[in-house]
View (cartoon, rainbow, N blue to C red):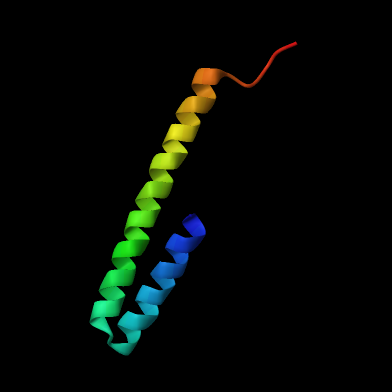
Amino acid sequence: MLYWALIFLVIALIAGLFGFGGIASASAGIAQILFFIFLVLLVVSLIMYFVRGRGTRV
């Protein structure tokens, strides 16, 4: 998901460079949404990791 956020960020930067404001704005918005979803999933994964422990202990 972070990969797609970076792709949309690059598209937004290129579109902004060439003066396509609408496309740049939309791509930047999508990149921002995907990045925040990625961060939320990362935090949830870290919380689950620490709550569950480091795996099964034998």
